Amino acid sequence: MAAIIADSWVKADVGNMKKSLAFYAKLGLKPSMQVPSYSEITFPGGTVLGLHQVKKKTPVQAKRPSKKGFGIMVRVHNLKKVVSELKRKRIPAATIAHAPGGADFSSIYDPDGNRLILVEMAKA
Image (cartoon, rainbow, N blue to C red):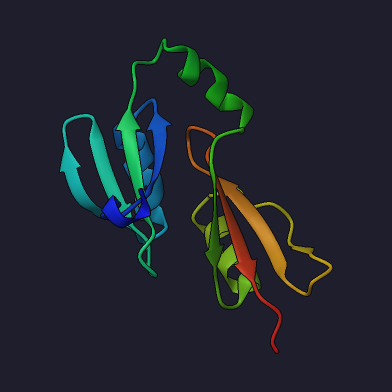
């Protein structure tokens, strides 16, 4: 099957496309493709996030506020500066934590509870 795969991306169901796109725009990310009910955002490094508009009363949407959606690891430089900038933009970020392997990390959530894990790897 791997030989027939053209590419892949992460999909997230969203309740309000306009609100979701505004959130990602605050992060400096703009849609690389938009059609009714669907938008794609390409992150630096090539990861593509597909945002799929769902009806607000679907069972999947009802679960989203619990913040148990997908998680994308996003490698950053100078995590303290990134978290400070997010707070300036009124995007809540988790307190920076230190992983045993040497990486520092924080998390933010989009409006539908999907998690972006911000990671600064330890210097080798």
